[in-house]
Length: 121
Image (cartoon, rainbow, N blue to C red; front, side):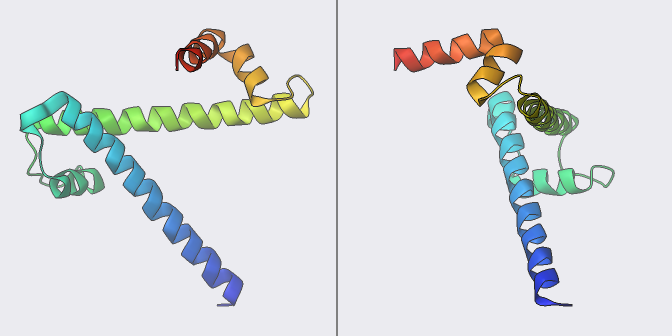
């Protein structure tokens, strides 16, 4: 394998590990909020998410919360990806010229709320 291919494979491996860690952190944070004292160990959650069809040490409630948070994370990521594609298309078409303009157009309520929070700081 040439040097470029090896570096590309290494980068992909790093990005994959980073995405997995970010996702696990999101799930764990959400589970802590919901479960409180009933929060399982991080390793048990990781094992469940990597093989949900395998025998798990998590209770049924913990499994439901873990999967719900994983799906929530996927929804957030999909929504972000869709917005990035929309922004790219609208910018190329000359409809918007900045992210702020795009946000005010597609999410007017959220955009106004964001500016109110910044003004309050």
